[in-house]
Image (cartoon, rainbow, N blue to C red; front, side):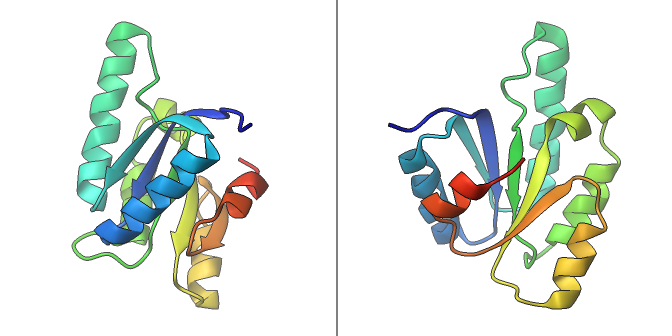
Amino acid sequence: MSQIKYNAVMLIDDNEIDNLINQRVIENAGICNHIFTHTGGKSAIEFLKNAEKVATSSKDNSLLPQIIFLDIDMPLMDGFQFLDEFDNLSDTIKSHCKIVMLTSSISIKDTKRSKSYNNVKEYINKPLSKESLKALDV
């Protein structure tokens, strides 16, 4: 039987099929209560800001994801632009949310660049699997 480790996780990937598959993998692994999916970084940033407002007013931070699975290659706002915006968010959000790069990029440059961000805790290549979820150390 799986054990709930997180109240909420977030998927950010412009590919809706990848989001659907990753959502199913997370659901089947039973590691969280809520999964929030976004197909763009801008909507995810807005969600985080709004979730923080709700958390502040209600003293309930259950809408803030503990893990954000972030794709790198996205239009409008790529993963690195999201990380730059994320760095400008409140300390509350940054301390609560840990980021896992979930990408098809095998570029060493991307791996190194992602590790330069304090909130990026892991770098996982797609596809997400039950095994990679179990191995998460965030």
